[in-house]
Image (cartoon, rainbow, N blue to C red; front, side, top):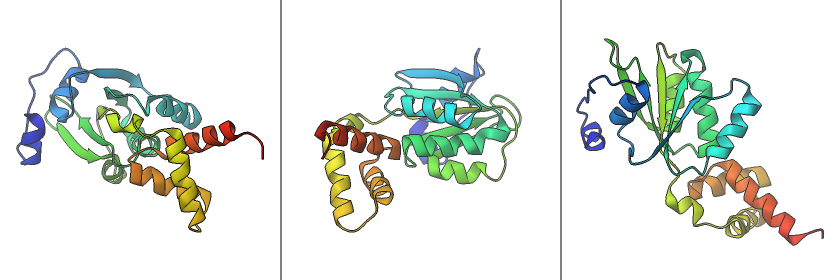
Length: 186
């Protein structure tokens, strides 16, 4: 219902609950059947990237708290780990006068957040699509090899396959590494 209202540009307000987590979930327009609350991500880039890579295939809706000054960087890291097309909502100042909910693909939310974010921030990110697991690592590696054979370098080939598959670049890279390990030395 919230998703349909959001598509039509109808404002949705939630009666305050005991936690920003449940309020953000309710107003996000994303699936609320199953969710996982992750709290604050690590501040250090490497640790944050590792944690996000672990969450990339999580099928439940993900909820995070984030500091306003780190929101753009965190959304960019999420776009890299989860894929730029993954849907999300930035919920700001929930139940307060300046409440704001911005919904869209991570790539659009990064651009929005780069202008500066203020206030308490709760991020809600859609879980990985079931189809994410249906493409095996061998198939992904074969797709990357086909793009490389067409004259594209490996990094760009991985990015292209990731975009076409709706996967994070890291997932495709890991599939290529796994396929190479299965083949063994030349």
